Length: 456
Image 1: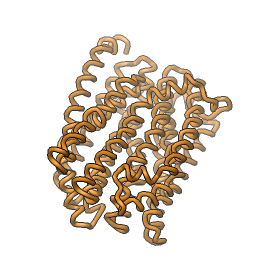
Image 2: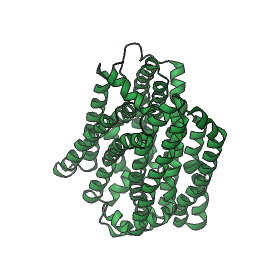
Image 3: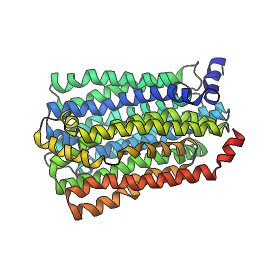
């Protein structure tokens, strides 16, 4: 490894943690926000130019896209976390073996799920709450988006590894490239060529192809700290287990989102109809923007925590965690205030339909009551991913969206109707926050604040 690449990695264990978190998080946040534009721009243009039924049709595709994301995240986050730990321990050849295996796993997984989604698209959409009115929109969008799902997995997954191997700004550029292409092509295909929701999907496919090409080109260069090499693409069972064990937590979050969205959409269809489903789509889009910022902070924290965990510099690991929690909490508090004080302004960005605006106003005010604590939950989950504690990470991942939320969604609507659907979200956040705080207190006490001081 040349001196520049060595310095690029060693600074993770030497430079001030606050400066490192800023250096790694800002490009990650920008990149994640830019990537979020793929979905947000699609939804704004579709809502404004195609109509409220199209927004509802797009909303019922969220569970399917969450499933695809879950499979991609399983490899992308798992491999990037392992790369950070292994590089921190000074084992570059093993890091490159992880890189090659990650590529093979991504291709195999995508081939399987794209085939399944294509064959079963109609029953899946109806299972996730599509009506006869909204199903055609969802079907047209998803079938055109299938190639883009593979490209998205490549772009997102290897973008994480790029950042973990010491290239935060280049990782940001990967996301910027795709987003710029998407923003330019969306109005062209949707409005100018009058292709509607189909045009939005095609624009996204082309944009993701640009990001995927850029990130693959990076790992083929001979002058980078980590690159593809012959012999690393053959699947190794030990490497697969190490990737999947860490990636399981965020993957389960996305898979759980699929189940939650299915239950939410079916409940909303029963108690509020297509307009309620459209309101949920707007609410989820708004909160996903805020969560995107928090995930960017997580991505900035992950290589710092992972590297210093591998290097046994525990005091730096702890400081990175608390700084990330503070930054994430600022984001979620601001988001909660915007969503509860001016919810109609948020809704009008996506639609001009008065009924949908009113439904979205009600949903945002109700669902965001406890949103301020979500940043703490997400950062804590990412912390356990970063140090390879898969079991704890999986528990925290599932606590908010499965263990607590799904039972509430199955119970409260029967008692309170549509209100029961909406209040399930803040109630699950309350309980998940308590569980997260208890586990983090136990973790620092058990793994030893004393141990961190002694070994740091």
